[in-house]
Length: 234
Image 1 (cartoon, rainbow, N blue to C red):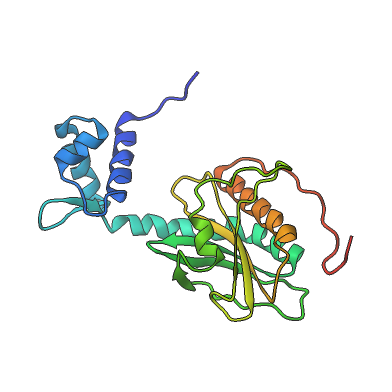
Image 2: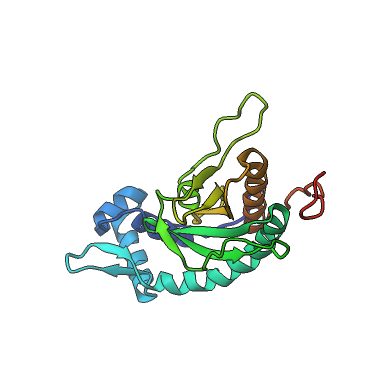
């Protein structure tokens, strides 16, 4: 039996989704056409959302997402950090490199959570809040990976991006997208000094990104095999 839902709330959320996807804003008529909803209904939804600061009208009467969404986004930040930190810490300790979660903010990738390994003599310092264009560096390009790559002959998906010296001379990075989380465009990555073994590190970063997605969506992540002690060879 399907769960009961609120049609009015669903329509209000669809209004916000449509406005978020429209760079130049929409009129009430355009919004009604996109949602296939009566113009009068859309008008009432827009007025209600505007009273909450979630929708605004510009000088031409076009509708945009309002600044009230920033309040909601700010409340989500600590939750995202709390969920991501243990995943990144496990990754950093496993591979001996600085691990990070980067999220898309317009045309830039922003480092939201950074965890440094505890047992290495040297590692790359990566500042929370660091920004760079989405097309530069592994973290930014990985955010653009909408779906995993086509499986290779061995059935393993190579869903990650690699970079070398693009953001910091002498540093290499590898990142995988966080997939399947509505409203979140992000990647999990690592950055290290010198070269890295992508064939070895890549699947571990992909697994961490998958584990984070499962935690954020409420699914139970699969239990990974226990890795060896840091710095030791199997």
